[in-house]
Amino acid sequence: MNVLWPIGIVAGLSGFFLFYYIGNAKASAQASPIKVSTMAAGIALNVMQTIALMGMMTVEWPAEMENTSSGLQFMVLDVQMAGGQCFMGSDATGRYTVTCLLFPVIVLWMLCCSLMTRRFVQCAPFSRFESYAWTWPRTFNIIGLLLQVGFSTASAVVMQPLMCYRHPNGMRSLLKHPNVMCGESEQGALLAVGMVTGSLFIVAFYSGCVVAALKIPSWSLQGKNDLVMCFRFLTSNFRLNRWWFGLLVMARGFGFGLIIAIATDTPAAQTSLATLILVVYGFLQAVMWPWKAQLINVADVLLSSLWAAPR
View 1 (cartoon, rainbow, N blue to C red):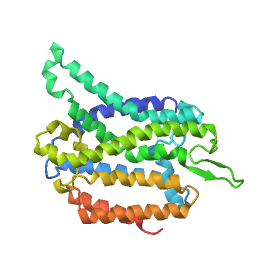
View 2 (view 1 turned 45 degrees about the vertical axis):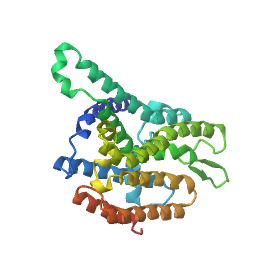
View 3 (view 1 turned 135 degrees about the horizontal axis):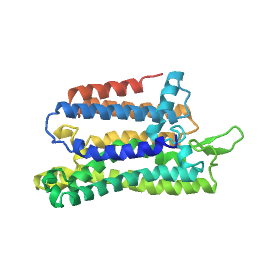
């Protein structure tokens, strides 16, 4: 297992490099077959994140659901369930810090890749590959896309230091770090790390997306194509009159993490609030019909209905 983690990290960073060329494919008003495939992959990834988040709830799920959610805990960067404890050590603060560092590492890696490709094509023997060099607007688009895809995961990670559950003896400890008692200094250290991560990759990122969603129509009219390209991840999957719907998709993921944090000891409240989020999202999705591909719209509505159905 100690060997698998470094291999996985290297494979992941290589995949992010290749993702630049997939995620920056030419956009069109109608979804191409490749675009439909990438949207379907995004929906599938979102389903796995949702199952993993539900597995974090203190709800007694059926055995099949428990087994499935346990196997998908890597989607919320649960290093213990994924065998990462052997690689990262047993200290809760250290493990949590390494987990949170994953987000800035990805951003820095993409920026470094952009710099490297731009330098690469400046060398005479490789100048013929100039068309493959990364541009800053497209680099920021891919960084935004990766943060958008991982928004539910980031929300769950940031909320972990707030997820306190009560033991029969009245003591309270963290749901994902049972050895860390709530109210003690170690929880404070985790909270500090989580607040920094959340400020950058939840609050600042989402706020930037909101501003961009408001500004994109005027940027397009003014010919500010580079700015539009930087935030194309927010709009490329949706119909032109529903360009902002990606904000609701991210808000849904954040909501799941939030309800686990505010109602850790109340399973009934967790399921009720989760159902409310799914019903509201499903209703808005059915009314807005935002995705470019009709098949994706149907799948999204059906999945929201299935999740919200009583169990």
